Length: 432
Image 1: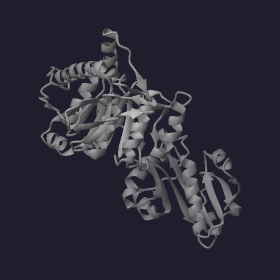
Image 2: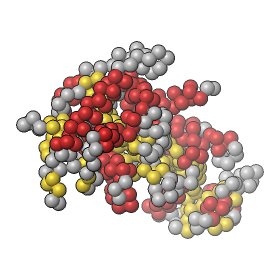
Image 3: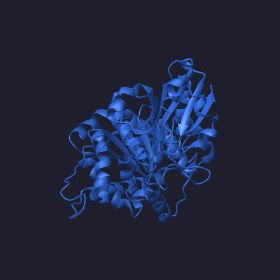
């Protein structure tokens, strides 16, 4: 089977889930200038064709820097925000105006043999962001640097309803006709909050948030963000992470940080279960819960390969349906990725832990330990004092978690009579 067929099948639930959703996408000036910008535009057009309501916010920092340098002017920053005096404001207006025209032109292309063929997009914008001056902070006058005061929610939604892509620049206007330079992260965050967007997508140079060792942090809660901000300091990753956290605190369901340098990073993040960037969200990405009848299909998909290998005892759909209340599961994005069952043994204060399985793609993440803890909690709640497990392949795993070798003679008679000597499973027990 071709890879793209398999990918499309796995992506179809997300295609349906994203239809008619509102996404605010922030692309910094570095991303617009990057060679991968054309691919990002293609991916945005693809999202639009799938029914996603798109608000695109662009930045302009490097473009402003080049214009300042051309005029012999030095950039000034305070607290990582540009100080925009009158001369700098001219450079800002020039850079933003040219960028906006370039982005609109790229979104207007009708390229043969590309996702943009026949797209016929409408790009809309205008005075949709009202701003106010930041003023003087710690003795520093920011002049024409501002912050978002209000986003025209009704106006933007009207344009989105008309199937336009809304393009917002890092400029805002005051009721008195003044122009203010605004950080694109501020515009994107406020737009996402005020529009009650389903997602805020933030492009950066890195694949997402990197930890101290350079490894990608895939998932975070907003309350975990401050510790990373202390580590990052004034790094741009910190700005993106703070914007993501603020959006989530403001009611946006999910904020994603992806790379503008990696071709297809946006689609990978949105249409695969694990994504490719960093996700910040209020809700649990995974949950450990008791199984219900609707989980039978997912359980079969999970345990069937292990049954084929002889690791687990075969269970038919009918058996699973009958015994479904014995199972606890780990669910991720609607998929059952791990399970375990507790079978109380008749006429005893003991139980059997059975059918502990974790999807190979999600091993080494502590999910087996989570399920073991859940089963032990359930056993104690039932008044059980001993937990047995029978295994052929994972004896060491259970021994590392407090189980000790046992034997058939230690099993209650109701369970001992069912022991399969042909499988020759090793028996372990653990006092609760």
